[in-house]
Amino acid sequence: MGHPLLEAIRTATDELSADGRTGLGWLSAPQTGIALVDAHRLVARASALVAVLVQHAEEVELHRSNGASTAAVWLANATATTRRDAYRFARVGEAIIDDTSRYRTHLAPACETGGVDTEQADVIVKALDALPDDLPAELRLQAEQAMVGFAADHDARALRALGKKILTVIAPEVGEAHEAALLEREEREARATSRLSMVSDGLGRVWGRFVIPELHGAMLRKALDAYAAPQHLNTADDPERRFQRDRTTPERYGQAFQQLLEMLDHKDLPNTGGTGATVVVTMTLESLLGGLASASLDTGGTISASEARRLACDAGLIPAVFGTTSEVLDLGRTARFHTKAMRLAMATRDKGCVAEGCTRPPHQTHAHHLTEWSAGGHTNTKDSCLLCDQHHHQIHDPLYLTERLGTGKLRFTRRE
Image (cartoon, rainbow, N blue to C red; front, top):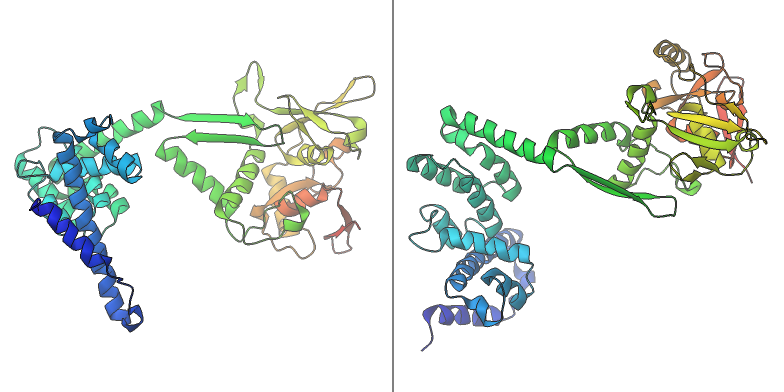
């Protein structure tokens, strides 16, 4: 006769070995809902058993049988489970395994009956473990009961947020101080571990990744949302993809990030190395006036002549133009940017983007020099107009011809 647990698992396995999918067509919608909830609860109960077994495996040193470092690693190796999930089982199992475990009163029974799954249980364990060490036992018990109760209606993500405030819920007089201390610690750690890395792939792209505090992530998301709203038709490098409305969120955010950087005014940035934090683009006069030769960046990269002409019109960039003898012809003029008063006047006059058929409002436009700044244009309302990001790219794109209509609108026609 084997161990009762092994016999129970074998019996349950035999029962489930029958094809449970037979006759699914007979299930009504209400019955299907019941079956889904009950099956999920069954999975949760089985997961709780795995969690307890992992902890027991640690105690009997099962992992030494094959040289694994822990029972969780043994489980990951034996079942192709990710180590992340295996260690989650271990944490939960250690917290609920028996009558001496620290969360045996409310969490353990909820896991055993399938009322709390292991993902929720892991969040609850972490939240309770984060409570102050000197918290009275009765308050810790109240917190455990409250978190288990919340699990009935909240998923693991929502429980994580509730866990940070659980002490405020059960004991406001001490909870606020604990939450404040917890947040301050998280913020200090977030600032200390902030990272940003970028690398060029040599194909005209820069790849990067970053880790920043919650506050600054929210600020960045807000700024990107201002440009990445679904109704915005941001430009794409491929002319055939312009005017598309079905871009994915990462793609829209990528376009928005480009616009955000281009809209930065170098005057708002600190100096570095005795000079302003401004990208300098170097190109020949011939390219500036319509040639095709590429332009070089002072950071070592290169961009197309059409892109340089567009940036020279409006972005935070100084055009460094050289003649045939390398003589500096133009390093930008101090009045290149339109003032707020000019923008307001153009908004009143143009009512938004002046491209034919475009309905972008003034706050979604750039101020454009009709006579390019790099070609001697002046920064005033007479020689300027408003263009949205889409049409501002197009007016500098050699693929398009531009015609000024009698109405003051601009008509774009793609070259054949």
